[in-house]
Length: 273
Image (cartoon, rainbow, N blue to C red; front, side, top):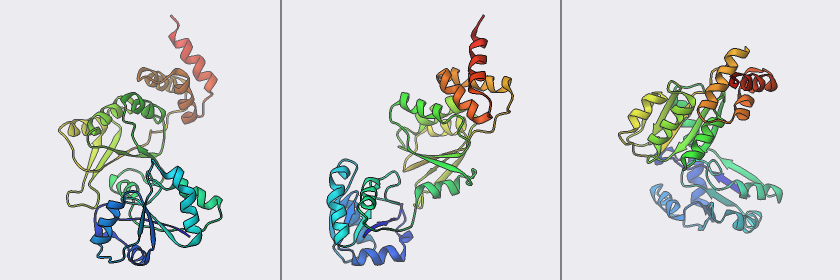
């Protein structure tokens, strides 16, 4: 059996009784970083010394088949460095391979930076989308924000503290200075902090330098009025921020229910002298 086990995201006291019990008896653990897993075992006072096998983004594809066979023969525990395996961490390919091979898969739930940050954000939680880490390159990052410009659900991103200020500036330039944002850092740790405000306000704050592990939570786009002039203005705004006309009309049409063709033709007509 393959057992996915969530680990603490900062505070060891968040380790569940089920996790501790599992680690005390585990014989084989596939770990994102075996050094981190050794520290976890020591921190929890676990004397068991299971066999540790590295499983990370660079070797998961080649290791999946052999790990599935281990899970077929006995219990194989999958751990990430923090939080739930497979969620912006290695494990998806292994889980997929196990399911395809009819090997049972179960989970020991626990801490999640995504859900914890969402709960702290003060933004709507009834519908949300997790977008993982923002791209490192500015062009790719801007493309991501343009693609999500009319996303109505709350959005959750991971980001490096070194790129936070730049990412918030890019976010404000595409989604608007007044888009509501929360930046949550160092979740469950001593210096946990949640900053809430507009994209412009938080970009200014982050310019001074921010440390720690970062989660950005962004409010979804407000519904557009379903009339052509308002929708056309939104298309033009997206195009001005760098979005291609075709992509902008598709996004706005989906947000308003208006015809893509009508929007596109109206946008073209507005460009004519």
